Image (cartoon, rainbow, N blue to C red; front, top):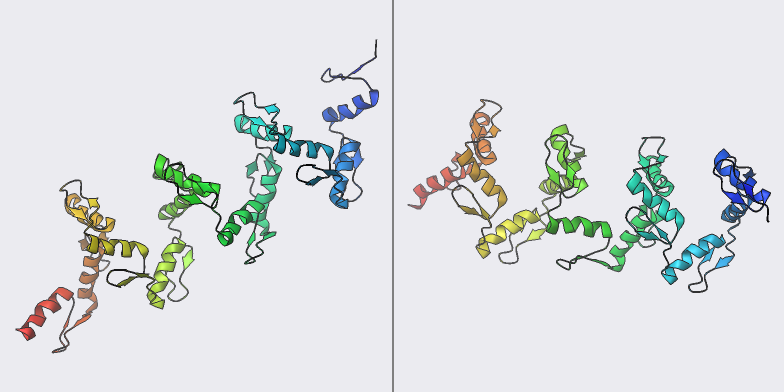
Length: 365
């Protein structure tokens, strides 16, 4: 009978004593084989040899289907399963299959909750070393992947690949509900929440939910009063970048959104859309108290103050309150003495546009 050598830690048996000794390194943590270039250590000499190909750039194993080359035979075998469709490793929890054992191990951490790789700067944890490596670039500022068209740089290859579709026009991900296409899978997933109604991101202060993590972050500034975006002309601050961009048009005079019916221009796309309803007659926002309809959501909100009695806008001089910001602005002219509306017939000035119009009838008869 052939002699076998059992491991006294796990009872696994081996035909050769040398193989047993290599195996025991799994239990002892011993890594006796050291790379003389980078000092990384390994439990097996074969693993060291494969690793050394990183430094020599030797890739002796070639796929006969697509000619891709690999530094190790095991890597080639895993790769070949892309062509054969073989997925021999099965998760015993959800039955999902994988073409490599390492992929299965990473997947199983979804079920176990294990996140063994920790960032030594912010203590965030990850299921894979590759994700940790990409994350650490947040702290180092490293962006090693560069677009060869516009030179924009990225922290990871996935970000670069999605970006390059801006130049190629490729949109390979299609919504199966409305057929809208996207350049990235993550963008499609966010979009699909419009159809599912899913809002997975919750504010821990007021419990309001959001379909996008970025929208939640912007919302949280309502509570923190953080306004990180700063106008370099007038020093006004904003809680989000889009608000700053719209505001800057006050200084530049830019009104990039023209109406294709009357050519009136607007600083914001939302204002153009609301304006176009003058031409279409559309009034999609209905009051649930009196059924009055409005062309814009903001108009509906102002109207609803009639029913709620809410007067959220307060004068900081006399504390009088108003249901609309426009009413507050007109009122404040009582304190400032401002008369911005001017009669071009007699030079008399007025605080309100409506008062000017009434006055002009004196001249028109």
